[in-house]
Image (cartoon, rainbow, N blue to C red):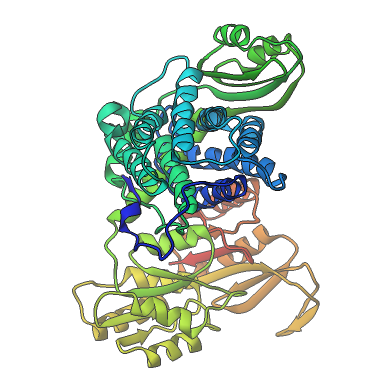
Length: 551
């Protein structure tokens, strides 16, 4: 669950914080709250399970607050009230998602509480936070405890209780109340407890208040928000709820002249749930979850022209979020081994990490430095390590890192990624460095590597004439063939290995290869080599269409 460093953890500043905040200071404070929210948005996304586990609460709150800050930044020497008005208008126009719309109402309420205020003291600011909570509650048709609404309410109670103190006490009390409220959310909302997380929207509001109030007190942001969500718990939650259906998250703005938000809310309620309808007679923002977004949009058009229309498939969002959780859970269970490997491409990196290695980004066009490799080696537990360069141009840097390390570092001179993977599979956690070095070197030598890449210029290599754009077929890092069709080159290279009777070919396809091309290659190879077992994995590498391990 999320946590932040308490305001009270800071050393006292030499200069006492002001108890009267100008409009310009408030302007800076709102910008600081956005900066702090942006720093933590990815972690907040990872908490998101309510109302839909789509993983975008932090992102939506950032987009909403960013729109508010952009509006506020246009002001010159503003009053507090003017900052509040601009903040409210900008957030309404830029609100994204359920959490963003509620945040826009929190900012609108704060603006109303600070109306006609040129400078803001503790009592005025407390009134703004209290009104922020009230506006948020009023915006939600069916409020649920254990959400951002609860956190806003608890923060408001603390603000009111400390309205007659000073900005130091007010800021500390509001943030601590919000933090305590966030930590209680799993006890108030069963779905959060089941997933092993706190409420994402509530955590986002805590971060916003913390960034704002710390800035007003002259303090920098604390350490980055940490998140210790139980991956195993969330993975179990994902399995249990993988078949849940949610429809489409539908959002739009209605532009008009004499609209009635209550009438719009009643009409939109016929088409779905999680309904939020906020605004005024000239501009109304609608957020809803519906199975029929087209019908809802058609009905909304009777009130006026639509703008900022968005309809996202929440089932697909949930599936993506759950897939990420499953990958994280699987990675968390992997026993780390004292092996550093270089790799490029998300898929190839995940394969090495799934086998326990620490990966340094690097490959054909991005060779890591000796320092990069040394840093990874020094970060491993134990007094010895193995380095797998996986590229002939990285071997020397790996050996330099080994010489500079205080550990016993063995460099297994793997020239290709498949050699590195074979070596890593041969690693034995119960054996000593000498034994592992020997076993891994032998395993790497038993692999044949095939690679397909594209020529960037005309050349003649080994008697082969190459034109820019031609595909090159490499076997064990040596040029073997050229041609116009990468799939044909793969087939030809495998035919050249037929006498060795290979049993398994693992194909890692690159980021630029279309899925249809990969499917065609698989079909062709299965027809041509019926006795060859094929594994096809998205490697994600950029320069090589295919990297193939043959055993």
